Structures are given as structure tokens and as C-alpha cells.
Image (cartoon, rainbow, N blue to C red; front, side, top):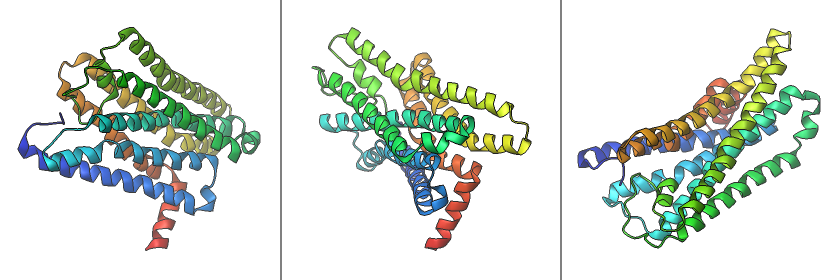
Length: 295
């Protein structure tokens, strides 16, 4: 159903989302290229950051291009197969976002709390395994939810009150056993919400405890600066996600829920490159070196 029915507002929405999409893709792509081109940044922390940037590009590319096509074609229809595909890819990249943020928190925990064993624990093989586990767990989640939606028998001429095939709304259309669906939803919420956030919270409790025992103010600042960007992204991602959940629970307007979902589906991936480039001097220097090299 999109964000607005006002025909005069459609060109503005197209321009706004096109600009946000280009900024997101170019910003995250610049981080990936800067990390890959600078040998100094070939470390686990920046390896995970480049993967997060790739996931953010995939996350926003799942929804925004289709919405811009809908605005240009003056049609909001999506096929059954197209809707399931969009939902599956959306869940896959959303799940990987959650998992990668917790993996990055673990990386910072090892680097600060166990610095002498960091190279041994976070070796290239372990890093690749963590990325693979994040991918396959997210893929499993997307396919489980896909199978539930495939069981729907009344999935025809459905109106979705959002600008993309929102998984939570599709599952509400189910004509099958609601108990099974609720169990799956709570399980998914635990796997991709509670467990990753608990891991991040535990990691930062240990990091804070370790930093407070350091007497050198210079080392304290360095430790805080390496965690600051990641912590800001975590707060943005989980804060906007929680805000959308609360908004959906309180608000009775589906259109307002759609506008709220823009924050975590579009705004968050767009802001991530700015947060890392502004707060991280290594990324900033690598970006300038890469830009000077290509210009």
C-alpha cells in the first residue's frame, strides 16, 4: 500500500528514497573498498565491518528499489513469488545484521579483555566460521518463515499496509494453526533478538570492567574509541527496531507503522557508514587514501 496515496507526494518520495538509497550503497561500498585496499585494515574488526556494510547494502536493496519502481509505474502490485522472495531476502539480511553486531561485540571483547590471545582466538579460520554461522542461521530462519507463509490458503488479493512484504504482516494473514506460528515467532525473537542482544550486553559489561581497571587515560580513550562506533550502531539498530515494535503496538494506524518501519529499513543502513567514518580515524584515513588513489 506504500507510504502515501497523495499523487503530488509521489515525486518527492521517489527523489527522497533514491537519494537515501544511493548514499547508503555508495557509503557502504566505500567502506568495503577502503578496507579491502588498505593492508593495515586487514584485521578481524574491519573484516566484520566490511561484511556488515555488504549486508546493509543487501538489506536496503531488498525493499527500496521495488518501492521506487512502484512509484514510477503507478502500480503497487507484487506477485506471490515476488513477495515470498522479497520477504525471504529481507529476513536473511535482517538476521545477519543482528548476528554480525553480536559477533563484532565478541571481537571487541576478545581484543580488550584478552589482548595477548587475540590473534590466536580471532584467527582467519574462526572469523570465516563466525560469518558462515551467521549466514546459515539467518538462512534457516528465512526459510522456516517462508514455509509457514507457503501454508497459507487465503493468500490472494491481500493488501499489505507497508511499502514492502513485511514478514510480521504476512504471518498475520495465516489460516493455519496460530499456536504454531506464535511459537515460531517467539523462537525467532529469542534467536535474533534476545540472544544477540544479551551477548552484546555481556561483552560490553566485561569490556567496561576491563577498561575501568586500566590506569592510563590514553589507553582508556583508545579502548573506548574502538568500541564507540560499534556501540552507536547497536543502539541505532536495536533502538529503531524496538521503537517500531512499540509504535505498532500503540498505534492503530497501519500507514504510521509503515512510516516508522522506514527508520530501521532505510535510515539505519544509511547512517552506519557515517558513524564508522566519522568516529573511526583508521576508516577515515583509509577512505581518503582510496579516494586519492582513484582520483
